[in-house]
Amino acid sequence: MKTAKTALMLLACTAGCGGAIVSWPAINAFTGAAHAQSAAPASGQTRPPANVRVASVTNAPLPFITEAVGTVQPIASVAIRSRIDAQIETILVADGAAVKAGDTLVKLDSRQVEAQIKQAEATLAKDKTVLEQAERDVARYSELVSKQTGTQVNLDNARTAAAAARAAIMGDEAQIENLKVQLSWYTIKAPIPGRVSTFSQKAGNIIRSGDGTATGTLTTIVQTTPIYVSFSVPQRLLSDLRDAITRPDSEITVTPQGSARSAKGRISVIDNAIDSATGTITVRATFDNPDEVLWAGQLCSVRITLRVDPNVVSIPREAVQSGQTGNYAYIVEDGVARVRQIELGRFQEGRVIVTSGLKGGETVVTDGALGLTNGARVDTRTAEGKKGNS
Image 1 (cartoon, rainbow, N blue to C red):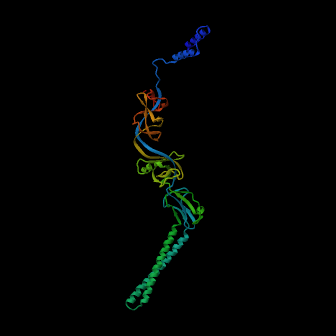
Image 2 (image 1 turned 180 degrees about the vertical axis):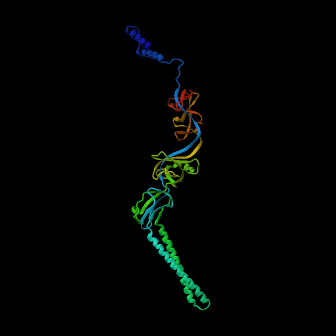
Image 3 (image 1 turned 60 degrees about the vertical axis):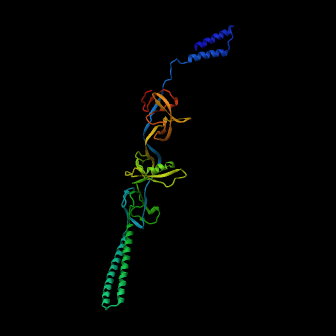
């Protein structure tokens, strides 16, 4: 720069002192050449290696996972109502208690039907006595007719009376059976295992059949073990879902919102139609739920492992670059970055499957690729910060 300034001063002086006339373009050309000479790098200097982060190309099993939001739904829910009008005598379980199928929930006042049963049993005993008398008459008249000392009319009347007595006994037995069925209605039992809600009525209240929810429904039992989780997935996964039902490596993991606990289950039901408005299909998974981690009505994060694909070549998503010729990645070989064209499959767990272009074991650039060119020297470091060989 000092040489250029000196030359400019000399030229200006020469022009002003009557010497030869020098044009300004010539001055500019001279000074530009001098500046370029001073800015040129010293011979033998090369560009320093680029500092990049790298990761390995893996060839290993990779699960096919999709995620959704689901709702916990009971497999069965039963509203407990009374079939007769009666007074509540005793409630034998607490509000919200867990019950088994067949457990007695409520006892109603059954004294009236018990008295009716006793009355019907007395009528039955009476009709059996009548039958015994009629059968004795039949036997006696049969003997008399056989000896020709009695009339056929008396024998026929005796047989008719015996038949009528038998019919009366059958009616009595049917009446008793009917009353015993009604008596069973006074003891309300749990038809399914599950957990009861709060009871709408307490002991001493009158419960009536056919009433609305206010007085007709005593409680509701919701089955909790096992239990469903219902969710929707895109219709493009339908074939994979159908295969996953029978695959041993498929699994559903759900985590209720606000909970750190998870539960594992399996796909059990796929809806019989796709929702044309949303392009999704509803799926239900079954969970044993022994600890009642899942509660009816909960929202859950659903993680669906449809299968585990073996020998899958994959790279971190950050290693994928896009250009005019398609997707590519920088491969580091002997401290030099090389461009490698690749074809991609699905994205999974922060990695992308490479269907063509890589075979596993290579080293790809995951950070710093924007400043690279094919053949550039690099200084590598791993994701953990460890430096590699350049």
